Structures are given as C-alpha cells and as structure tokens.
Length: 136
Image 1: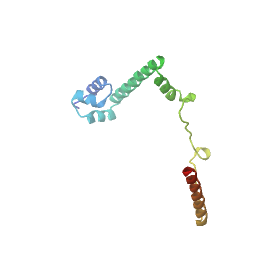
Image 2: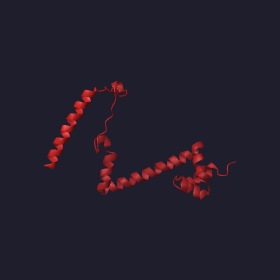
Image 3: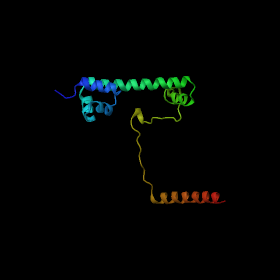
Image 4: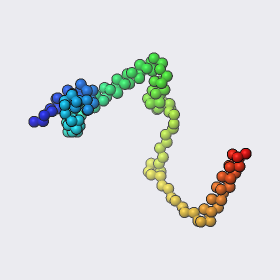
C-alpha cells in the first residue's frame, strides 16, 4: 500500500490550491511523488485540473470587476484577449499555406555570376547615394 494515498494527496492539493510543491511540503514528501501520482491517477489529475480552472475563474472574475470599475488596463487587456474575434488586436495574424492548405513550396533558382556581380554593383550605388544624402 502506498505511503501517500490518493485521498491524502487530493486533500493536500486542495489545501494548496493545486500547487504541487506546496502540497508536497504539507505532506512532507518529495514533489515528484505527487507528480507521479498525477500521471497515474485520474482522480488526482482531476483535482489539479479543477484547481487550475478555479484559479482561472477567480482571475477572470477579478478582471471583470476591474473592467466594470473602468480600469483602463483591464479594458485594454480584455479587448486584446477576449475581444480578438471582434478585431481588437494590436497585430494581424495571417496563416500562410500552399495549394489546398498544403505547405508553401519555394524553389531556389541560382543566379549566374554575372547577374550577382550586376546586383552587387546596383546595391553599392544605392548605398553610396544613401551615404551622400546622410552626409549632406
């Protein structure tokens, strides 16, 4: 029989609000003991997940309170996260894909040496022109 039953671990995790290291301290065991039990016990894993969800719900409630109080940081944060679907974003994200959503195919074509020389000369002239403008 294991020294730490699921029941004891669950009780410690609930007291520690799902924090493994705090629960381990309460039980006076190594955190790896609890981590291993989380991997093999559905009941223990469910408690950790439930505590995590409870934490997020609490945080969301505080965010809602801050928004309702007119806290500008909270309004901005809520719009940037929860309001993304309505277009409240600081940057646009674009998914790239090839034909039928497949990968984008890129074909590299080698340049002939004379083409590279010509390109380098054009770049050099552009840089010289920029230097003249900057140096006045």
